[in-house]
Image 1 (cartoon, one colour):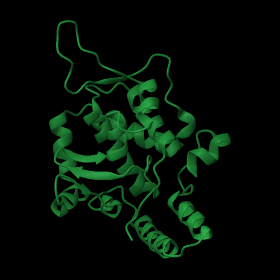
Image 2 (tube, helix red, strand yellow):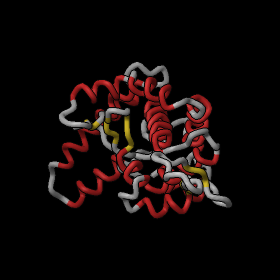
Image 3 (cartoon, one colour):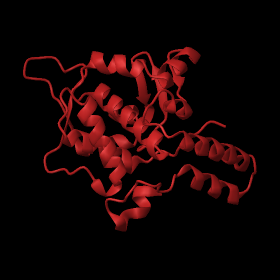
Length: 230
């Protein structure tokens, strides 16, 4: 069974808001998706879980966090909360609406730090520092060169293909291979439990998909420990 994670809408919203608070240039939905992907990838290979738990697909223009993109396109319930945090660029008077509008953090909105662990914040800071100023063309080349992307794209049937979290570890100097083995063992156990039609197995499967705190991860807000790390 492939490694999978539960999507965390609160942490996703917090991650997008936190990146927006850093004011990266040309922060359109393409850059949102690429910076979230690179953040999820690095946190996964270093700590054993992604930040958002989003489901990734390889599209022609690169890896895409599918639920986040749906929210940015107003095709997911999270869109309402996202609009409350991000302000979309409007058309200038007398000019057509921007084809790919940019986003900024709404005034007086804070990036919901209580939902992000210190390791989340550290990784987000690293990714914004390393990639936040990159252009569309640069991010395109960087993400298309990753094995997780081009292997998924080679398997595609149609215009997209599900990406495998196991392949996020390939050719990555940040990767901890022992984490990959643990994730594979956990995925196998999830598969066994999923085949058992009992309420207990459903609870156990959910628990296995919600990764616990690992060495090196610390809570930013200990009193919100369950929401930040469970």
